[in-house]
Image 1 (cartoon, rainbow over the protein chains, first blue to last red):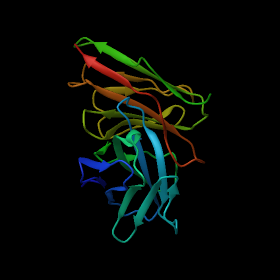
Image 2: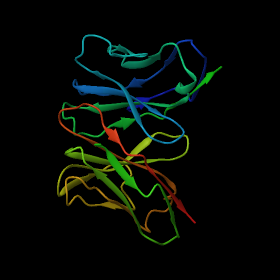
Image 3: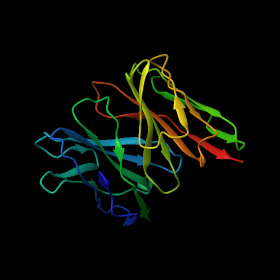
Length: 116
Length: 112
């Protein structure tokens, strides 16, 4: 079974609009962390935002926020005021357990295109 | 500057040859990882190491080998047993304090 599911292979958004990228996860471990990474065409992986399973509030980092719905096992990324430079591949990932040295499991990604 | 360095950026290999991809980090991280990415797809874990002289297989370890003789180095060898090695390879590291994994710039391997 897929541990991380991203159901949107591609998304389009108008510049300056907000966009939500979906991510659902599956784990039986009560302790886990959820991550979003951005991958531009150059290939580097850029860390955007993190949400721990015990965090009471949704994580925010500048224009990025994470809509964490624990009961639904979803961790959607919201990008506000989209910019042309936001066009990239976006990956949701999960780490199970409290040990930060454990590996990340990635979803298949969503290709976001910001239109001028 | 602290970070992860992968080399080379591009690598061409003839069928039947072994090649080694380099990954060096100066972040003093305990854990290091190798991922493979195929076009339009997510990252799949090849091998990971949580401590020097120890490593574990990931989801797609067949045809690959690694070593972890030094904390800062985690080279990946793509052997001739790997039937479809053309892909983008990403190395990452993490420690027990920070939550996120840091990635290198990647190596694009092509079999010719």
